[in-house]
Amino acid sequence: MGTDTTRAVVEEYYRVVGRDRDRLLELLDPEVTWSPPPGAPIAPLRGAEAVADTLGRDFVKKMFDLSKPFAIEIRRMVADGDVAVVQQRLTGTAKATGAAYDNQYCWVYTVRDGRIVDMEEYADTMVAARAFGWEL
Image (cartoon, rainbow, N blue to C red):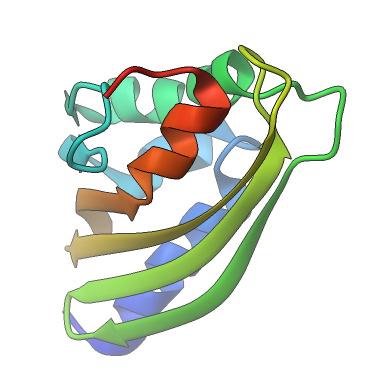
């Protein structure tokens, strides 16, 4: 798969995630895998429906107080062949503790045949643990 196609698929993913579930499902391979940050108390997921529901809706609503400002800022995207790496910042208010949340993320996406087949998420799990009240 070409770099331009990979970039376009991942850009479209960010455009529709949390906004258009049908389009999100079109972008995700039926057997897509999502691997959360190593060390986070979150299980990996497999399958477009599970990933779309969790990342596109459930996880954000469960973890963040959406009555307060919430933002995902894409800082940089680098694509090469079938892989795109996205550096982003997520800010909000943790629902469990009311604490401010400000964390840096790196996502690694693999795209095949115009669909995302693998998503690896990396973040500072200590920042998340303090905000969400996790015991690591």
